[in-house]
Image 1 (cartoon, rainbow, N blue to C red):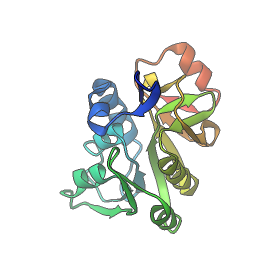
Image 2 (image 1 turned 90 degrees about the vertical axis):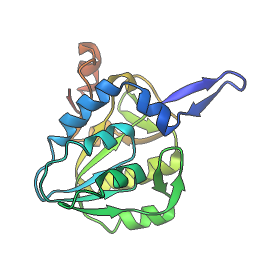
Image 3 (image 1 turned 30 degrees about the vertical axis):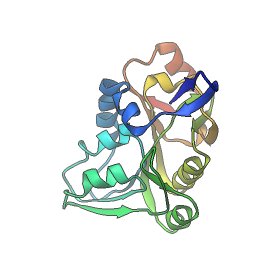
Length: 197
């Protein structure tokens, strides 16, 4: 998500707290829908982002192996003794609470992932984008490794682009969005991937 700094007229990355305030009902809806795709004994990756943090409330109360590079997601799951929890370390980005960079990239390439859930800042035609090149590169590696690749994005992310394109919708199994998506947007983007709302 971007806002304009009118003094310099340049895109500004919203803070974690600012993003939490945006479209909270829609994010809750998406989190429930996406979590329903997770089954007992799955090995899942949960990326950074406020919608994915909400997913932690809806994970099945069964054994899962959960991998994340998000400190907020990790902290939300530490009390759940049913899950095997793995935090990927690396360079820490305070604005999103994510670990990125070469250490994170090397670690994720050694792991097997059944289902990955990744958030995006923008979706334009077949490409999805994020603000940070480092976060985008890591998420690209995660999605490449995953047997099933899922994106989460509220409907206002469609027809919006951010700084760095990191993946193609054509390579994604499904994109979870909210019920405010228009039929025309859903039909247009449905040519690239399965849109679930």
